[in-house]
Length: 586
Image (cartoon, rainbow, N blue to C red):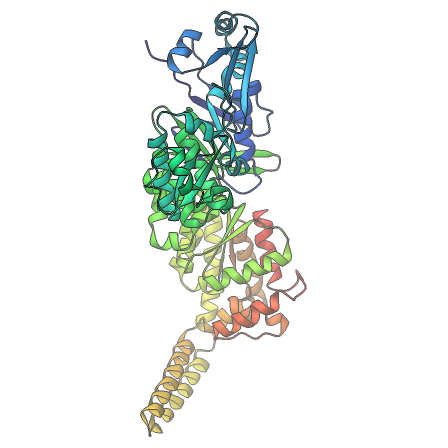
């Protein structure tokens, strides 16, 4: 006969999504969408009332044994006689900060055993009341700092109410302490030791080397008293130790951890992710709520045998999307996508994909002016060609997204087709968009080729004059070469038919064609792709007297300082474009 094993079997969310937790389950998503509430509801169901308050979840299911005998054969549930002859069942509460106990004046086995004759919800309710705290550990961000703080030693047997008391009383103390010490050493370069030399209280100490400790409080006290207590350290190491100690000391089959990355720098968040990925096993489930791409990268560096779900909120209803861990791992290992921090968009309400870093910084500054408190992630795709790929990934992950491209996305039919194919447009809409693009291209190719050729001739003469008059020192000759190089670049620009329109955008088109571009803009914007009507980033502030410049760095330094002081005017750029993006993502 199979031995009973406590296991969280199913979470049913309010949107109807069913999630079957695996040994490691990671819940991610933006802030304030219910990740912490989800963990709290699971704990309350298992330890108090069995039925969630329906904020995030409709129901929580877990395994229940067939009999009290099956339960006691599988888990060391402790019960003791009190001073008046009644039974007391004691354990550390789910939040690992206090003792939880159930008292009974009757016979413990008979009185408790009757609950196993029930089925369905009544059985779950009884199980929650009597045994729930035995099976779940709930590590909140605040509690992790407290659970490894200095506290009293246990004054009577079977009454531990802290992790440090459990650690001291465990026969595996040396083994557990050694593992915790090595993990902390690898992360922070410091060692951890349990100080019980004062006898009346326990605390953790930090130092460089505790190999000389004997385990005798009389000889160890002088050594430990010279070392700082963990309580005097920063929140990062205290939180890290809290997580590691809880998983090594508390032998419970379900561990819930809220934002394990809290207080940790990115490399430490990565390490704690890798640690938790290794800490699962056949008799333990770990369910984590996180807001960190670094933590998720740490998990995926160890395993893809993990269930990952993205939690979001649309209106008053939470939505859940189960993600493919193998696909996420591919993103994490992709040089371009990882450097662009595509991952981080999973933790925001929406993502805006742009061509370059300067674009992202400028649009983000403008977006904060248009609407305060926006939860948007701006992603540098490094080129317009990568934007469709990143947008497609976000759509698969159920992340609201938008892309912003320069006007010259229209100068290549096949490239523009790739952008359209990522937008889920109907075939008729794609045909209409391509037809407008083709018409704009015909206008560009037919407009003033003779004028452009004359400008090329002028630039050639200037370059020739510089070369003919170059003489003197090596320094003067190098200066002449740089001047010739600049003129050659200008010549290259003059030969490109789209050069002027890239700088002027919609305003460079005749009125009838400008109206058609407006239709094209709306078609694409409706699916999340925004073609810059001003042309390119360096044309965005012409309405405020900042002319277009080919000196991108110089223009950006001026623009980023100016935009923070401008009043928002939705009739002008860049405000209209930025507002359109925000409205699409709302």
